[in-house]
Image (cartoon, rainbow, N blue to C red; front, side, top):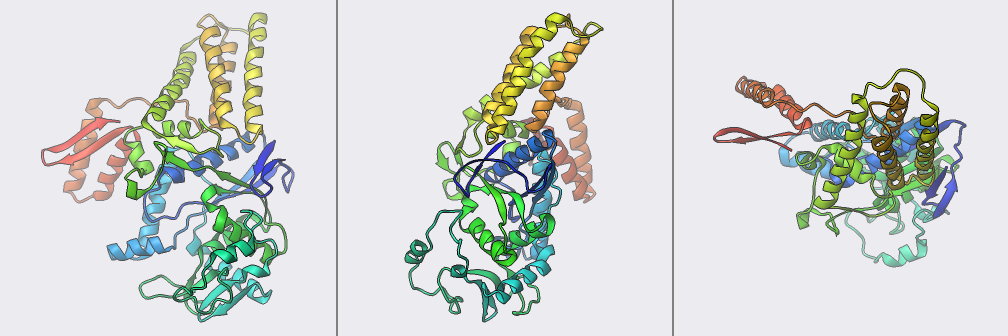
Length: 466
């Protein structure tokens, strides 16, 4: 199996630190709002990588964090007049709902930054003791030039970085020895959450969080560290510096990064009005379509989101689901596969090998999906009600197994009848009248998960199918 390693800028043969096991860390979202479709790409991509390792018999320890202390979370909490934890807990729950809709498997561990502060203080102290960090007026900085390998992931030259920094001191950073030094611990500000530390009350810098959570749940060395390519610098670069300076060993053997997601060939941004959350997309499409779309391109390539491409993905997914439903509808003749069927089935074995070859070549899901379509085409042409039960079941199982590796659910969900929808809407209205808002939200989310969108108007509740 070959993986493109951002560290070496080439494909390398995957060799785990421990035989039959994979230790994998994926940077999770900062929970201050609903996750957007850019966040969804690494979630889907690296969930698929994990699923393939499991398909190949590896035991995967998969860790993906929630950044639940951050300037954006604090800003939103102050706007709403609530504690920062109220915001983070709310959006962790919402992110988990979206991940479930995208069929992203539960991580082995989902650590939260706020629950690992003790470990962060410990690592910062280790870095100070080793001369890699220093405290200045309640702030602790990492001494960037003390780490020889700085820039090895992003291929940035430290002297070029130095030249790019103007000699203007940022307010509150007067104690910095070098403009390149980055924050490990920041002092408390009024209206912000804080924790006691040897350097005064405050909170951790963003980069130290992942170094500590990775170490706690996976050990000092890991096989794969993954995330979006926007994290290569400075986040992942700084993680390497901290972890390797503290632990005196290579942090991660392989670094994987997915490409950017554009909207109609333009970078997604709120200012351009082309910013979509996963929740908004779920009102127009089944989230399985979004997952299928994300896997239609190689994970390292930039991916362009558009209505046309989503429509094509919806049709492609429908072809697979229809083929599965067709196979399930056949009774089939009793007995073993005939000799003719066995000879025919060799084609399916070839397509499975094609699927595996694609995934073994740096997880080329685009080619893997093509192999699934070839099995579907084979099934539509060669498998009928006159085929043996053994043949039908074998082809069906192969499609379902490969789809499961891609995280594609092959069960078609039964459509809710109009009467059932109306009944649930009535129940929701009664819950709202009784001020049982939790139940009202539950019903709304249940309907949304089944593709039913509610709109509250003066004339009453209107609904439509997504």
